[in-house]
Amino acid sequence: METSIQSARFRLDPDEYRETVERLDRNRKYAHDVCISNLKIINKLAQIANQDILFLNLEHMTRTEIAEKYILPIANEFREYNERQQYANLIEEKPLDMPKTDNEIDNDADYK
Image (cartoon, rainbow, N blue to C red; front, side, top):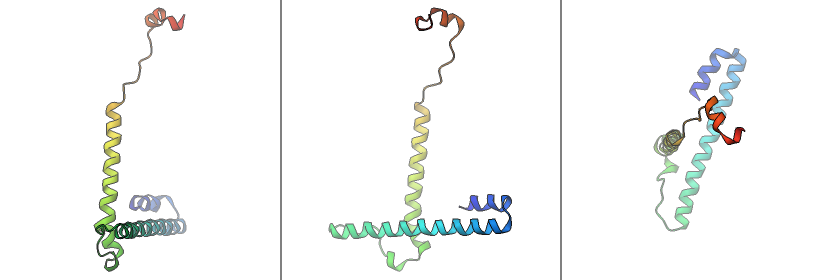
């Protein structure tokens, strides 16, 4: 989000910039609220299944504390996983086929 704000500062007029920052902040709050709700749902499901609560003291923590302690580590793990997958895919990719030379075309039955 910070990168979007920095970029917008130089691209937009003051009114558009203010609206963009407000929209980005609102979207961040919505995403944050969804994450906190999901943590609470996971805790409730664990309680129903007679399992240990995974995310302790949510009711006594601020939004920022919840983000730092629970949401950010989960988000970082997903990001790192995706980066590892992308790297693995790059390693597994075969090099692009080079165009056939005239000599190879002459000897290739598909081209005759």
